[in-house]
Structure formats: C-alpha cells, structure tokens
Image 1 (tube, rainbow, N blue to C red):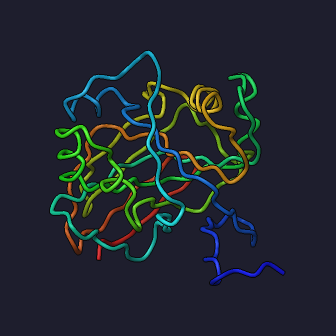
Image 2: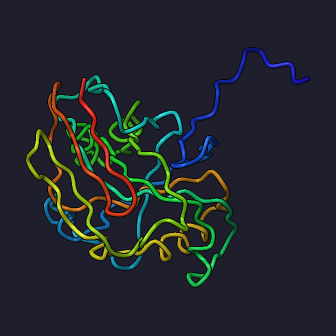
Amino acid sequence: MTNYLFQPPAPAVIPIFGSDKLYPVNRVFCVGRNYEAHAAEMGAVVDREAPFYFTKSPTTIIMAEGEIAYAPRTENYHYEMELVFALKSGGTDIAEADALSHIFGCAAGIDMTRRDLQNKAKETRRPWDTSKDVQQSAVVTPLRAMEEVPSVGAGRIHLEQNGEIKQDADLSQMVWSVPEIIADLSTMYTLCEGDVIFMGTPAGVGPVQRGDVLTGGVDGIADFELKIA
C-alpha cells in the first residue's frame, strides 16, 4: 500500500452517454485559432505552418449542466464553444490516416476564458495560464462513443446566450482537422488514453454575466444548458 503524505484527489472524469462507466481525464489540450473568422475577430492571423496549443489542468473539467461559477479576478469572462474529443489510445508520430481510430468519443464543450487577463498577457508576451487554466473553465457534455458520432469534420456547432444565437458555424470551417491535430500533437507528446482535446472556437465569442443562461451543442454529438452563477 502506497504511503501518501495525504490522500490524492480523485481523478477528473467525464460521463459517457448510455453507459455507467466514467472516462478518467489524463491531460487537456486546446487548439488555438482553429477557425479563421475567430482569429480575425481577435486581431490575429491563422498560422498555417502549424497549429498551436495551450493546456488546461484536468481539475478545470466541469459538466455542462446546472451552474458554473463566474471566475474570480476577471471582469471580462468569455465563452468559446468547441468540439471536444477524448482518446482511447495514442502513441507518437501517429499517421493522419490512423488518427480517428484512437478516439473513444466526442463531446460539446466550452473553453471559458478570462479575456482581460489573456489580452494583458498577449501585450506583455507572458503565458496565458491564468486566463485559460481556470477552475470550472473546461466545460463538457458527456461523451458520445465514436461509433455513434456522425462526423468530426462537418456539422453545426452553436452557442446561444439567453436565447440569442452568438456562435453558429460548421466543423468543416476548422483550419486544422481532427486527424491533423492528432498527428501533429503526437510529434510533440506521447498521446495516450485519457487525453482530451478541445478543437478551437468559431467566431462570435463574448462575455458572460452572472445569471446568464448558455445553451448550445454540436449536431449529432450533444446539446447542453447551463447557468453562470
């Protein structure tokens, strides 16, 4: 029996549609600027040489239901609607042709962001950690097993704030596809089961206020409704 100084926390987990099993989260990778229109609205240009990434701690995972907290130390907390997928296996130097075989399932998610802190970090050329790696900021629905997912390359992705459509796009507008991201990430990390990837957000991101109701989803994968507390 391992003699821990204190009891380690339970792993972050994501429920699975139609199953009583839970998916344990190992790492959370996020793709930056993966929709050209979103990059433009943020005053940036898509780097077509290679995708770029940031990470969130597994402890940021929270289910897209009920209430999620408005983050402290921000006055400009933004939603970013995203396709999310979770790996069941991995490796290094994965070929694009084999990439989809490593996916367990997909979810709809929101990458909540302290935009004021992110903008300040960009201005001072500092890391984005405090703007992105925020408690309750990796918002996800339950996972839908890959055999039930119609497509990870096409389909409507949308978000509404208090009933008003804010983001409405198609997965086909992603600059870097799911297979391309898996192949590229696997050249930098040994990917493995438990790794979760947020695929970037389309245009229309914006701030939330306490009491706002967010709804949205990815067609054929999942829908959600939650409230900002």
